[in-house]
Image 1 (cartoon, rainbow, N blue to C red):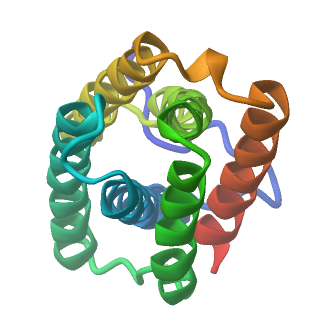
Image 2: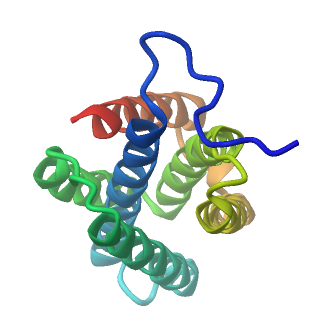
Length: 185
């Protein structure tokens, strides 16, 4: 039995078309924010940091994700989020701010963001039906990349960052709020 995207929506839930628009809109916004976070971290930490190559690699993957979702925004005529100018500033500020606290804090930021995105992409993969195989495959592929980013950040000592539990909790809360806003605005 095949499942279509949004077939199990309840009254008040977005229609299947609105659900697809939200998915593409928020994923484009999120990948944009991720690129900006890594740009901020790299601007502060520079090329000499022990995690410099890891940050460069993660930024490059996020840029590829962004390019894909930007193409989907155009192809599917999805309105981008109105929050983009804010994510431009806030993403860079989050990256630079955590990097100013040190490499481990920058890696803690990656752990927090990528754990939220892992949950987010998992939820999207469940929502997407058999009528959207390419988008579902993209979401699942990018989810695997995000989990690898989290694992790399943990390997770089993220959990040894000063105030790790508080830092991660605050960043996760902010990331969830950004997702909610970007889906809707």
